[in-house]
Image (cartoon, rainbow, N blue to C red; front, side, top):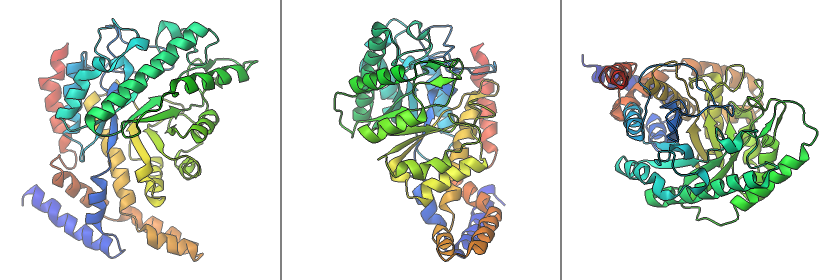
Length: 421
């Protein structure tokens, strides 16, 4: 029996089992196909960028490992992204950092223009992709003391404000050209390694810088501004200027998007629990999906309990239309294309699991105070034939089901990656 026939037969059985609980699998798959995940370009080259042959380091940015075959040029990075996307069901996006401008390092970050990203936009058009963007506020001589937008040095502060303004124009260009809003995110590493005396001053300067950056109104059909907080970083263990509380307040006050990164909180905190809280006050949310192991280690995303909980919150709260999902991990110890595929497929699997949940039925049990049935149902759902629905979705999307995608990655490694030296 052909494998595709087996997959279809297994799906029909699974479809009937879910129907018994009032779940329409076809409706779930149709909705899933409309959810775009923003793949982060920096997984493909270990957060190197194209400003120098040596790549970037410092500022809490570190990819560990030296697996052979990383992308060395924009063209190599683009074909690697294409390969990854060919193995992931659905239509997705690309998330780009400012340091991936094609200028050969000859243009300062505060002087970047849309033309420096024209090749990326042309490529995205050809592949039917939307794009998102990030300012690069780390690994630069003007960030050497650990401060950028909150710097007490007015010249340095203004440089980074100019960079932020340039990034907004680039993001707006991407959104206009591609016909879908470009989420342009701001994260800075500013902070102190040890306990500061003045916590107030840097935060006042950061607010001033953000106000200056965002002063020019932009068409929200082209650009969506986001701000991203963090608990601590390498070299800023004791104090981070742009904390979660700071940016939550700023997002509420200015109607910018709030970015929640799954690795940017205390190890005992979970982002899934924060979604319904912040969504009560912010209009839209940006998620950076990562996996921290003991700290913000940016491990490859897997189908963990927290990833499932994250997806459940988005579906149960009906937040999908107000949420933008991006990935943010970088692992140089394994095949980089495989890392993209594992992480993105993991996120899509989590969303499918959430879409296959009989949420209305569970909510009725909860409202009736029947917490026994609620717990029992949640446990029974764990053994339903989700895998059969997932394999069918992959086949329907013309990508490999099961682990068949890994053979394609291995072939690509032999034919392409191994020749990069």
